Image 1 (cartoon, one colour):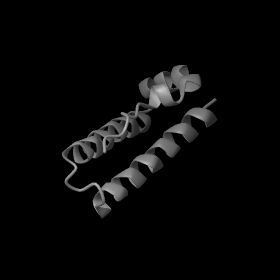
Image 2 (cartoon, helix red, strand yellow; image 1 turned 135 degrees about the vertical axis):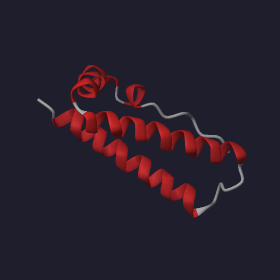
Image 3 (cartoon, one colour; image 1 turned 180 degrees about the vertical axis):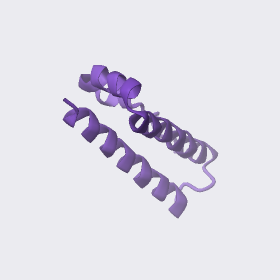
Image 4 (cartoon, helix red, strand yellow; image 1 turned 90 degrees about the horizontal axis):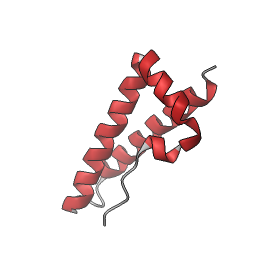
Length: 80
């Protein structure tokens, strides 16, 4: 079962400008975006191979991606 690719800018279009500014200003924010992208690619690879679709590692990766997404969202919403 293949899921739709997740992209933070398309998920939070109202925060696009803020996220782009944070990306330039904050090394931590840039690191989060890179980590989100990396985890997403890993999840998509597992889902495409369908080898571990019910595995604990896939679920852990999805939880990690959600935690990163939450932190990115909070940073973008709270940054003045």
